[in-house]
Image 1 (cartoon, rainbow, N blue to C red):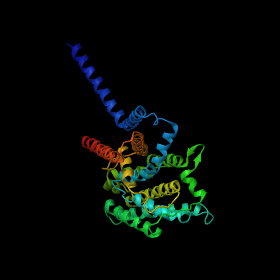
Image 2: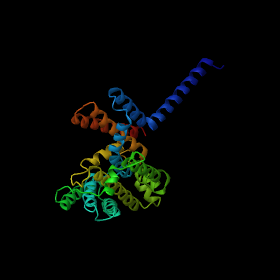
Image 3: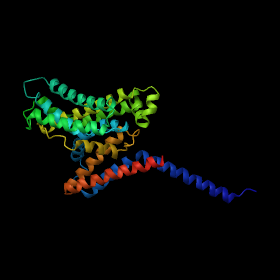
Image 4: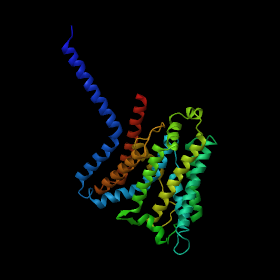
Length: 331
């Protein structure tokens, strides 16, 4: 004899489980975006100056430099690597490109090509040492971090390099239809990087290497080649950020980019990139960078000490890593 009460209970339980599972999937997929929106709502309630067009543009412009670097760092982390050299590469690119960007000396293409070349070369060296030398990425990029900063100081004699041409300054201060040029580049590079990861063989192999490097080798993927390409692209993106930041402050600075590598890693991790490898998206990293920007800007408007800002940022990073570790444990 059928038990209608039991069937109803079972049906309700199944429905609850289905909704719970669906909710967990939505939270996993859009949770980081909800965090950003919640932070923006909170900051707008605490400060009238936050939710203004000019302030929001300033937030995005400020994080565009870190955000661009973080895109390359995301790809590196997906392969279970790390890049500690981003900030120092920015400094080296800054002084090198600035020295060729004086008014009337060279066309704009020269400092741009030199900057991009130096960034890509630094990434190529990182990737080659890591892939071919079988040296842990932490050590390889730590060495590059120290060497690149030393080269920047040596090249500039420890002094800033001023007097930059208007055409070079445009990449940091100019606007296109009212939108600051760094924001335009941030969006464009975000789209390009997203398409690279989601729509190309390069992206497919990047995830495969991070998921299981040995299995990727068995499947015929040239792991060393793709690792070198990934680190080279990360260096290329650091160069873009370095030149725009140089133009933004109107001077080549050998001390530029200090701690940028940590902020870039933070943006990637907050955005859902797993330090265990194989997981991460460019969209998530861009949102992670925006969270850092909203946090910094909102706390500045509220007059909170920069020391407390550092503490809060550290707590957020550790929390993101703990959440990631719990996800991996469940998986």
